[in-house]
Length: 156
Length: 156
Image 1 (tube, rainbow over the protein chains, first blue to last red):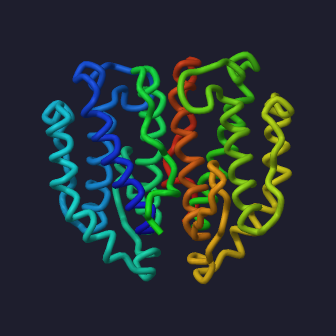
Image 2 (cartoon, each protein chain N blue to C red; image 1 turned 90 degrees about the horizontal axis):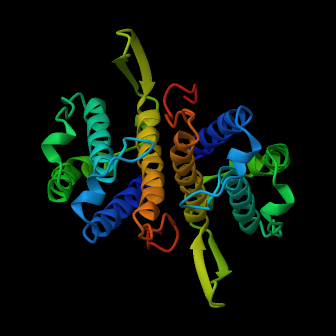
């Protein structure tokens, strides 16, 4: 579990570095699919990872809008701000937590249950999926994407 | 580990179903980013999953080109053909296999080593990443993508 989070954090940092060589206009440009823009996607990744892990810990979610963080510097700072709390939770993960039940409210207002291990994997897949979208948009912006390879990153 | 493979297999089947409502022309159309097309990406996902798992088992990799499987029916059949072998290996996975060393040859002809657990996670992330690309291209094709959510799939 930890290794896939570590992979996501490395890849996210690589994308932040990638963004530093791209204009604010490209980062904010409205695009087809997903959340509809490069910087907004990175904000969304940071938001969703933190918010779900807050839910698992019974803490309040992050609810601020992208508009309040619409520069690379602000999104990087937000990611950094949340990271210690996220990392600490991921590092303390044990097999016993896998099947713990989370009761949540569905968008329709009905109670739904998830397993904690299910949410953790959802968060992992969420980031990788959105990064796949970044890789298409980077080519549209005329720049090679960050590698998505998990191997050759020194993770193992 | 198994849950993320199962997620990928479900999502892949959802994309195969999605493809059945799309013209061969859209599936084959050259697109920006990644492998450059919807059907070719699905072929690549099937190929890479099977080939890496063959490498871990000391079996010969799959080496046939996309051109030999350039219809939805053929890619679906290929995925189906490989699935039992892939599934059986994933189901037999144990924690002891995580740190087993794989020695491979790099593209430059030099020996490189990986851990088996590293390759397994690479394969998982590989598919999710490429599916993220499909989600952008589906919008370009004017059709809503398959959901990438791991929750609400009955996996847990």
